[in-house]
Length: 333
Image (cartoon, rainbow, N blue to C red; front, side, top):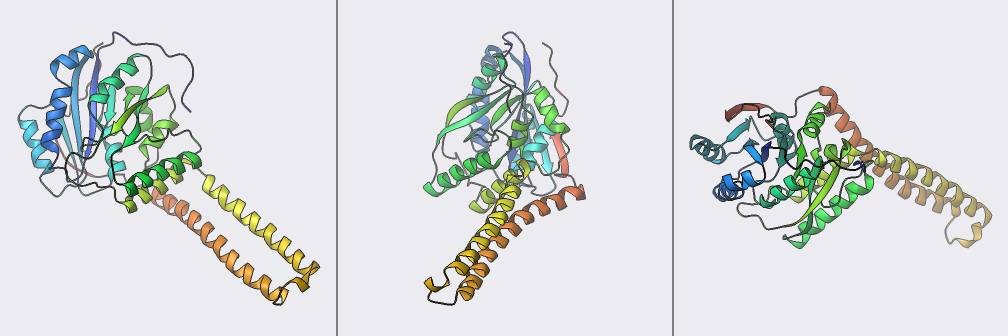
């Protein structure tokens, strides 16, 4: 739960900034991305925002196109970039976690490479951080996408918010800014299967949202299919709450009560039914019992599977190589 106590402004602090940008086959949008980054984070804008240094941390999540080559070329041209290449595709959430592992700046921002997270909003986030907030997350007013995808995301955010034990803001993804101490606390958490936006909410601190409109992708195709969105929703709920297990308990008890009441009704008024009452009872118990068992097994399977993966202790990702500006950044404020 975010803290509600008064914030302490930081108006004159000069800071370093890391931008974590996960990538998977994004060569079609990279030129436009660098153009926007260069415009938004120009020397004049950085000076105006009192940002003394900036670094772009690109996490290449096993791309099979020319993504790594294009990033390496930009590094050769002098861009302040660090390219972290995974040995294979480990997934977007693990790429975000890796970016947090490699950041050491005063402030860290996570954004997608497809420019659906407008880089211009980051400067507004820095301004809100200067007001005293430790976490500034992007909150989508509306998104330009297909009706089916918008509906899927709408259901996803509300399902996670409803079932989570912590307060996860609606319509807020990974796009956001964190103070270094917040990123450090997230890095210290022991779990391997990570849901970064849930962990960001769990660690607390002073948090506030910044509204923005999410535009269309500027190039390439969306990497989040409906099946991946379903998996993300399942991982998000399971990692953030035990309420589904409690729901399974409620269903089990409700089924028991239903069975007892139905049996009593059949005993008291057996003549009201066209078929023998005990035959009817048997049919109802078989159908409803199977539904409850399937529901409970599904929930238990999700938790058991996640527990199995956690206890193996494997890392969330494997780095094949790093290229570019890997020196830690600190604050000289």
